[in-house]
Length: 386
Image 1: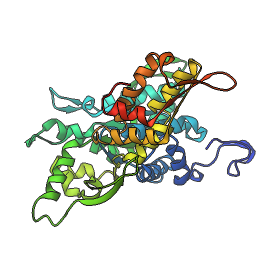
Image 2: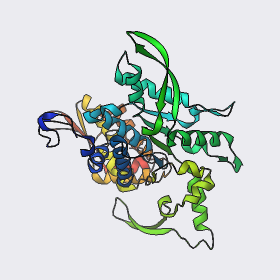
Image 3: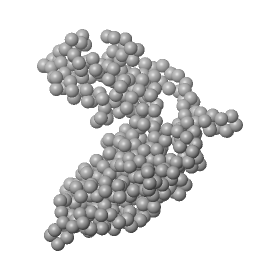
Image 4: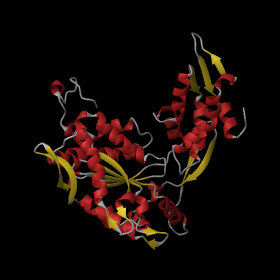
């Protein structure tokens, strides 16, 4: 998506019109850093397009188990804003935890905490001596990511949670569009002064995310309840070594209804402010294998870089990668994070002392090669020493 003189939308190498950076193009850019969540990225791409073109609000709610990629999506939106020159005006993006936005003692929503975080990003973008106009314009284009929104449910353990109600009502007001007063230091007439800025939140994009762990159990119990009229779906699973088994799997996206979120404790008026509720898919073996082999943050690729420093080329058999992914897939509530612990069982002893490992071999032309084999992975998973 980089702009250059060969871009037909940017004659002479100038910046393109934002409307020409279409959702499919945004999708391709985000997909570079987010694997296995194509459906979620399509919704996210449309939301970003709405926000950057100023057509309509593009607020979305991301729901997914830990490790499925909510924070990764947020981080890659931020990466895209910084890598695509046309998106420079939108680089004031902040990620904040939901519980920081409420004063628990006084049961008050604290929009100043959110705006202060946005201001810090905007100030870094505008420069050392921003005018009030420059600061306000940048803040009003911000993308605000609020993590762990599920922890601010209006119901906790079956009892009302006033803090959750306060947070959701406060965010609801901002997402509807409100002019908020915010104190900041700006430059006026060549000197720094403290002024009160009027920040209109209508053009901000809000991305809220959470694991909603209790929601999975809540919907699952509804589905398996006798007389529900619903049932889990069965599918054939082929293991890395070629065996096939039949499993019944629960996917929240197959059964979730709006009423489930209300029962969970999300205020209906708050939910109405989102264009879309986006459910991230649980990562299956095929996706986890792709992440292991291709993701920039993959534990395998990190280990590969480590061995390169030692003059060793680290490689892995395809079936071995599949077995690692299969083992990680058993930890359904940790997603891609499970790859680190599974791969670590194999890599740690190799990284500690590769020189005495019998699988280390000389490579023609110089250097050494170390192969992570299927047998090695099988021994590690079964807890046997090499």
